[in-house]
Image (cartoon, rainbow, N blue to C red; front, side):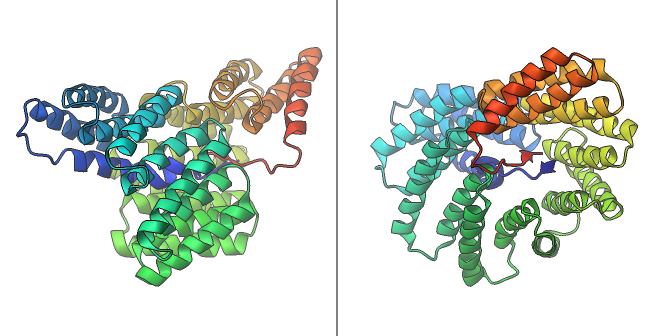
Amino acid sequence: MATSPTTIISKISWAAMLSVVLLAGQSSAAQSGELEWNDAMKAAVKALRESQYAKAEELLRAAVGEAEKFGPEDRRLSRSLSALGLVLYSRGNYAEAEQVHLRAVSILERTVGPRHLQVAEALIGLAGIYERQGKYSEAEGLLARSLAIRQKAFGSDHPDVANGLNNLGALYNSQGKYAQAELLYRRSLEILERVYGPGDLNLAGVISNLGMVYKTEERNAEAERMLKRALVIREAALGIGDPDVAVSLGNLAALYNSQKRYGEAEPLLRRAQTILEKVHGREHPQLGRILGFRGDLFAAQGNYIEAEAAFQRALGIWEGALGSEHMQVAVTLASLAKVYTAHGKYGEAEPLLQRALTIVESVRGPKAPEFASDLEAYAMLLAKMNRTTEAQEIEARAKAIRAEHRDDVSPERDR
């Protein structure tokens, strides 16, 4: 069930968020109030590196307050707002994140002009929010605009243009439009190979994205080749103990899980977990993803005790880092509920599925394919509990949603 995240910000712009904050924190403290702003920004960087998102949010709100003292069109304000918006996004607060990003974009458009590269970068953050809300046409328009700005500034063969193509590919991937995603990923990869060569670290992200598209399409030989290539590149460039190597190990293990190659997946996941715990400690969100993959593996093997432990630990990590209403929490709740259902623990499964449904409906809307998937799981559970009438009603809701998406390919759930 699980795959690597295909959302725009999680795959493309999270590192960019850190760079924005770092750049913003390098200003000298010549102006009154700037010392306080600098301190807040630098402390936010430290909190983000330690995955303390709630603390980072608090610090960035303080930074916005200090930046507002410099005037409504000061670039420090737009930088602070952009960073805050991305942290709010990461914590699942999409409504406020949208408003914060819109404000940042508006300031940039007035101060540097609507076709400036800073605007292009800010549009990506806003597009990521729209993608998570299921507003795909709005997200596509923003990403197309961002790409056009970059193409005009740099020409068609620049790495930033390749990144823009990768962004659009991630959006199509999240909608299940895998053929379109593949085309854009390939164009992005061709540019990067011409600029950097075939083994450069800058290629690893788009190679991974392409590999995960192939995994979803069950083009397993091509997927394995791409995912192994990304792993080799990262190991050579970063060393075998780097967190990005752990991400590649998780991607490859997810492919092996999908092929029931559990004996090959398990050592990769153990290695990834060891790397992340050594580098980041035991509460980092990347570790939550790996534990989710381990839970999937154990559940597929019928090892429900180990699966439950893995999902419970992943759930604690996601709730601690991102809050109790985040989509990653919903995904893990649904996975844990399926384990309880398979193990006959129906009373424990039901409140988890109900909670997952509440989160998905709130974040994605009542007609999202993900909502239909969880409704189907709930209907199956109710049927096992001999609550036939309720099961039929829930199943009818799921079928109605599926009928609206009859011509669409349902995207895989993010892990």
